[in-house]
Length: 448
Ligand SMILES: CCCCCCCCCCCCCC(=O)SCCNC(=O)CCNC(=O)[C@H](O)C(C)(C)COP(=O)(O)OP(=O)(O)OC[C@H]1O[C@@H](n2cnc3c(N)ncnc32)[C@H](O)[C@@H]1OP(=O)(O)O
Image 1 (cartoon, rainbow, N blue to C red):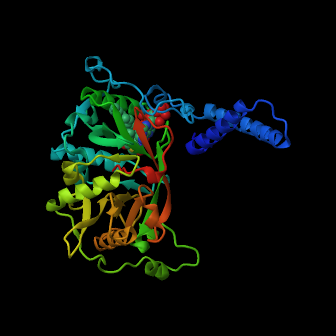
Image 2: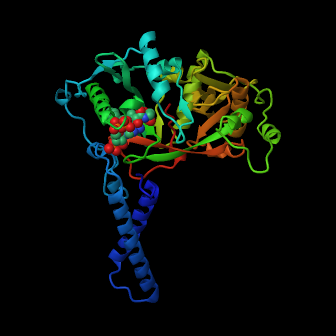
Image 3: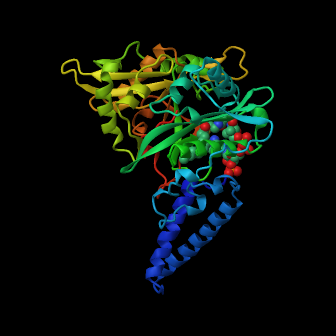
């Protein structure tokens, strides 16, 4: 069961307790009324501290995660712990050579995602077993093209695309993947792995297969001399570096209401709702156009400059920008604003395509969903730029446009009629400790 205190509340209370305790350390004997009041407050804080401690001990144990080099809940608020890598790299000669043991019926495979057959198998595993919403109404349906794109960035390692098969039937029943990425945390750039697409077939859940898969991908990453990783998850494990929220902008409100993704607001009719979310037919920013290969150097400059202001962000070079941001049909859409007069590249926006399967609706099978990716506005107001992105997404027949509250997204969400979702997305770093959890606006990283 999840703890009744959120990680941030706990950190806040621990920090407050420490502040009060530090004060008392300097002034041993309270005499004035004010000091007595402070003392009684301190007792309250003390009680609160005990409650926090108790709730932490009641908190479900994390048998696996407690053994891993990640910030633990009990470390929250401990300002004596150093920021940065938790464990030093081990000599490569000491990294385990053999794969971890799987239960006897299963075997490891390395997935060649260039092979149509392999990619199809991974696609089918994920489209039937990957992430669902809390009510099991929708399930992510990453396309094959998307998976190939997501798993083949510059310098990728095929050995980090890992499957588990049933030995006898050869059926693929689990998957996990990593890709390399340079990620800057404050002033230091780390070569990390981004971990994604961890999936165990529904029939094999709760059998502790996930920890073996995580250990195996870790081993294979260590063999390439990488020691840090970044990932996101909907679940809370020790310890999020940030907790973000998804916001949704209806593009096709009627369908979204019909399939139960959204509800008709109070005192709203369907026709008023449709009108509320209506968008212009074409974009309004002069010089707004699709990004092309020739734009890679200018987009790289724009994006590097922009991302430098966040605490955690990718360290993109031109190869990364070409891979991650050049448009790819039904995978990634990217746009630049090129000044019609000076031909200077002033702004950039992008979204990726991740449909969801609609589970058990008689009329609709799929929901077309665009996800805000990286956006940089230096001349055009960000809200206007994102409105143009919404216009394009609508023209491309997306049903909804999602955005996290990372980077500067908060500044446009309400004005552009995004509504807050109920799901949270937690960001994690493996083998890297941050002194404090971050605000979503301090994050310059979007993981797929
Ligand atoms: C240096 C390099 C390092 C590289 C590695 C970096 C770390 C990468 C980490 C992975 C990043 C993945 C990023 C993504 O892809 S996030 C997407 C995750 N996938 C899904 O949600 C798809 C649907 N669900 C499933 O397929 C299964 O429920 C999964 C496979 C998720 C768990 O399978 P199952 O339900 O059958 O459980 P179990 O009995 O085998 O194992 C239970 C243990 O697993 C821990 N658990 C459960 N879910 C997650 C989760 N999302 N991240 C991390 N840990 C998770 C859980 O707390 C417990 O440990 P502990 O609480 O007892 O300690």
